[in-house]
Image 1: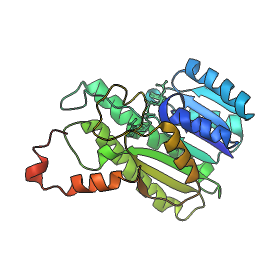
Image 2: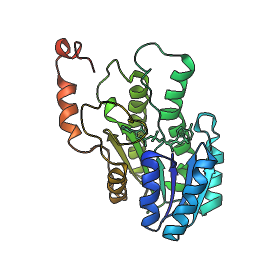
Image 3: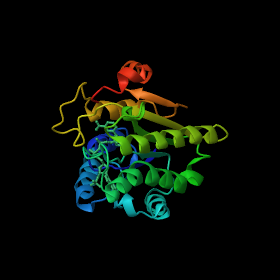
Length: 243
Ligand SMILES: NC(=O)c1ccc[n+]([C@@H]2O[C@H](COP(=O)([O-])OP(=O)(O)OC[C@H]3O[C@@H](n4cnc5c(N)ncnc54)[C@H](OP(=O)(O)O)[C@@H]3O)[C@@H](O)[C@H]2O)c1
């Protein structure tokens, strides 16, 4: 199998790159910093005897066709496309600098959609193909914190809904996750109300689900119960919550 991981240098993307390499996948690893990607690629190639191409792109100013061309140039064909890169900030709770709002929307929604769009002609008729997206439990119900991030993730979730419908007439499959807390740089130092899972566990489950025709699911699944309660909480109570 041949896989592209977008956002591969840290956190969940890095764990996924390792899990895929262990399963024998040839890889293209994408993140913004070549110096982060190079040692990771060397390490995975050495430990798992797989082909690994590290390619730096800043998704905030990306030409999606260049990402596609680099990946196809390195691997020939693509089976799996993982859109993992994301960005959140504690500043995202009310008015925030316009440039930061733009970055949150761009990285969490626009760039992901544009990259998938560039790869779609290569992937849609691949019977072994998968397109995997990472959303957030934050997108379950709008609240004052993570406002722009959650809106962008909800947009991405909606795009994956349309993608799944499109791919119902093709052979490629799609999986989308409303992700709960993961123990990565994104949550480092935060007091979390619920436990974070190790990125390696999330990566293993994502890989196990490849090949499934899967709409949005919560990861871990117990977030479904929490977010369903939150979603149906009457407004008179919800508006007072400091979440
Ligand atoms: N951690 C959580 O608790 C949590 C919860 C819910 C959902 N999620 C979602 O899960 C996904 C993975 O999160 P994570 O915690 O693993 O994040 P992370 O540790 O911050 O890693 C993000 C990855 O994306 C890459 N990236 C960021 N900006 C980029 C850019 N402009 N261009 C190219 N690559 C870029 C980073 O590399 P460079 O910065 O070097 O480019 C890194 O490889 C994200 O979509 C996130 O929103 C996370």
